[in-house]
Length: 395
Image (cartoon, rainbow, N blue to C red; front, side, top):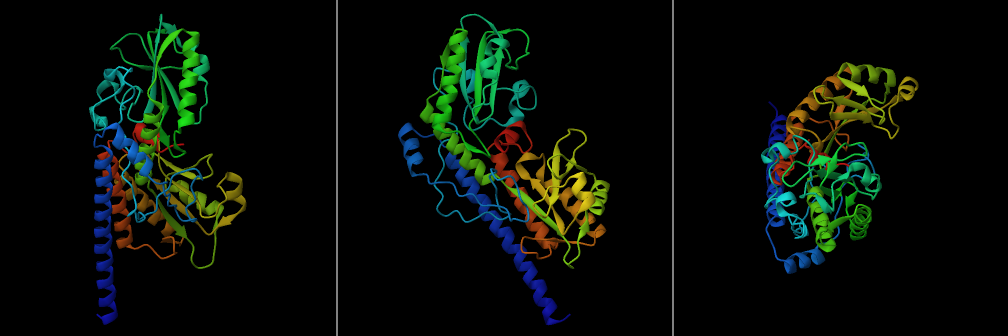
């Protein structure tokens, strides 16, 4: 074995060790922020933190892996965050007028697996950890149709309405055609998603819209403090931005040739992908119908049946949205196998953003990033792939 080979082996070992140490340090930083975010504080401390907190920095994926423009994005390796200010207490309770046993669980966030029959695994329920909730107490039970103006309201963030037939009974998600009458109503506005945090004017408009609906019933209105809810939204948005990781693996022809669209489609569909209306191929889990990972054009042009018949491309990008899939590490392993098989079939290579081939050490580093992000999400009781995660990391 030559000295060059020995040197390359040593360099590869050092690279893997260095990446593992870096990821361990990054995970410690995230965990520290989470502990700080969920430490109860008084109102003065919360307000001071809100003033001190700076604007959020949003790292992006490489142009080789385009994602929607309004999405929060994270690089494969997190950017340096030495200037990060601790976020606000994301667990600030809603206004005291709203019954605590109905909406405000104890700190920290209640684990999803412990939410019981009213949990995220079952029927949808109000989620006070991520929603601003306004409670209505009608003078007499009302039908869902009486809330038509609110049910069709569009405020810039997802809005849900729930009703229940009496105290202690389960909440039911309301639609215009929901039958029966309800003695209590809850209007729930999502505090943050990839479009950003709910602003004070938006929250004020939300409370005003609900109040107008209440006046027609009539019903008493119990609303939280707008300033406190704005602070919660900003804190939640900041935490989610830290944990918003999308992994891209690029399949590329490096010999100057192109991949015919028909050939790419044939290989992709043989690998389990299906062409979707979003202009990409989706790998869909048959049991749940959810998208586990996707394959999109290396170029900015979307994949359609017509373009695939008429054009060719230098490559494609495998995309894994870590917060949106259950068991992200397992899904990454599955995506890696699919990527390697397709690369072999198309006589292409898997590369990073700088067009350097990805070897086993590089894939191990990416997998560690997926694992650490999954652990950090679970630390704040955002189970990847759960309704809570889909709400926070959608939009």
